[in-house]
Amino acid sequence: MKNWEQEQEQKPCDIEVRQVGEGETEELMAFLLVHYYREEPLTAGTSPPEPEPADKEFLLSNVPFGTCFMALQGGRIVAAVVAGPKDAHEPEHVAEEARKHAGSKWGRILHLLSAVESATDVCRRFNVPSCVHVHALGVDPQMRGRNLGARLMEAVAQRARDLGHLLVSVDCTSVYSARLVQRLGYQLVNTLRYVDHLDASGQQVIRPPPPHESVQTFVLHL
Image (tube, rainbow, N blue to C red; front, side, top):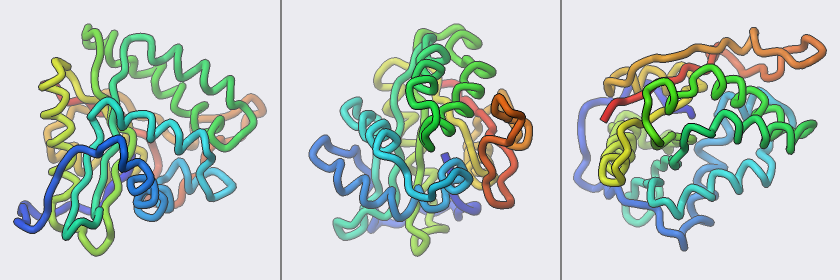
């Protein structure tokens, strides 16, 4: 999950934040392709540059849970967050998906995410049956500095509370998203450096552009 430089503490009155409806998946993905995937360190650090269909399908599969939100200005999406529930079986689930997609771009990304899940295992670590996990966050560059990332993360946290979850988790793949969630009171539980994550032949799996050096996992207790 990525985000941008620190945003000012202001809530512009012309911005509406609401849940993504199940009939709005095409609009959501069109926004994410421009304002999320192009700079997301896992996507940018793995060739080819375009995300694979399985990657996009996974993100959109979270919409029915009612845990995805978007910020709109004049009916136009200017920021969006994708989140969904996970439980104590997530490490095994991600490892299985990584094996299923082995050899593909999405498989290489899942290979790293599987290592992260195994190391963090937040549901078992904090003894909760489930939590809401943030997968993606994107903000239109023209709208940065207007606190939209924070507002979307707050919307996810409130939705998680409403659903009875006790925890929100996020794997920050960039330095900018890590700064954002630290500002929001998230607790760091694990760091995996990209240079330390290798494949079976000893090669670095993902090589994001600077300044991104690690995946940092954070949690927010609700």
